Length: 215
Image (cartoon, rainbow, N blue to C red; front, top):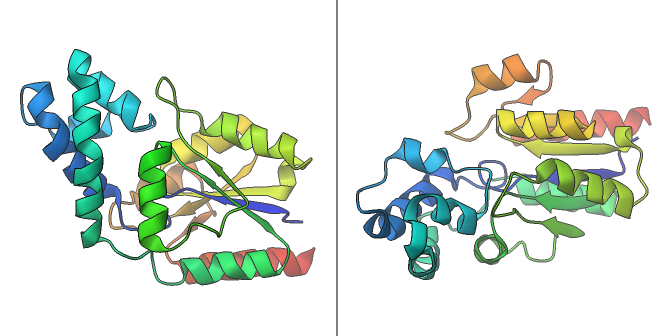
């Protein structure tokens, strides 16, 4: 029985991954001393923006962080809405009494900016954001399991990366892989998480509906 579904944010709820990379490159490169490559930026993924910026800007990280947020918010105009169908899915889960949470590697401030831009501030029962010193999604999952007194087979996490699959495996819960973003590596997801990769939000919604009906 499904009692809680937690969603990732970037690449799962909205097409924001490339926007995040561009904002990071523009705002932080001056403090890194060179134009940051996409590879340099993605190697910091898993940490929140404080941790990401510390990795590449060193002692200048506070100034870089100060400059990052306005750039991030401005660039969000390129991505003003979440994926079509995701809010409907979340609303349907809420109406049926399924707890819906958000677990993201983003920091609190960038997460808040995105949810405000998407008009999704009130949709989640709980929001867990990232840490600056380590990937912490497995910890966040375990915190929610404890907080809501859930068995592990009552919890599903929806995320778009192989690292999401690894976090779910570590926490002992099921990962449903979102492969609808342009940045999704579908082949890698299918290798890491066979039979649980979804190419559209509609397919995911149908799967969750079947699971609930079986219960």
